[in-house]
Figure 1 (tube, rainbow, N blue to C red):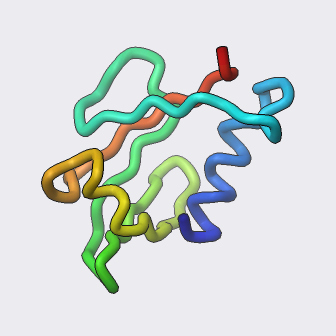
Figure 2: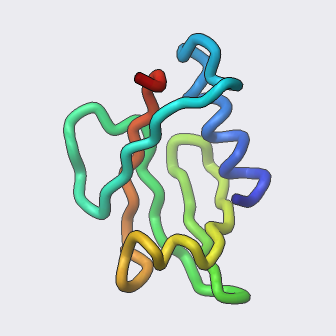
Length: 85
């Protein structure tokens, strides 16, 4: 994950106790209740994809492992972070 996206997750994790010991991230190409982040696709580069966060006014690169979860890079990714159960 690119530095900008790591910073976004750090902001989103601020209210999760002991996040440094693990957390759960739920993500989808479709909006869902409780999503904390919305990432918008910008472009492909070096096998990965750049996404932009309007909330944080920054973009970050997601590595090719994204395609283990999606057939193609979705136009939007919605993310919810919560404590590990």
